[in-house]
Length: 175
Image (cartoon, rainbow, N blue to C red):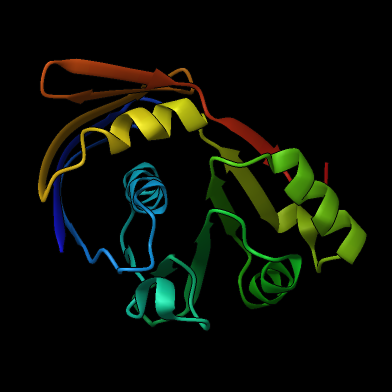
């Protein structure tokens, strides 16, 4: 179990929150995957958003899931490199599907188009810089304290005295 205390200042979405997250770190989960999952959780912070119950070992749910007060699915958020078939299923189940990855979103978008995934316009792909993820992995601890600011689409992550910066690349799968 890893703890993340995140001071979130997202001026792009007008969200200012103190997050206290606990993320189970499954033995088969890479540290890149964990960091990307936690960053996605912070960037998408909203009511009803949570880490999936089964974690990376769950084939039925995504890495992050958002439900409204009635329990209806609002957002399906995958991490890394989900298959086009999985995204096909997600787009049928939910109007908002996101993928956070450090891999090429161009290749994933092409695979989605080749597979003729259902409603690809519902799928947003977000590519974080691999060097950024790797640098943050180098600071990973059991208890983590982060200051995450977002402005003009750029992320500024402060861990201790170090500042890490990246501008995620976003792409609609239907583009």
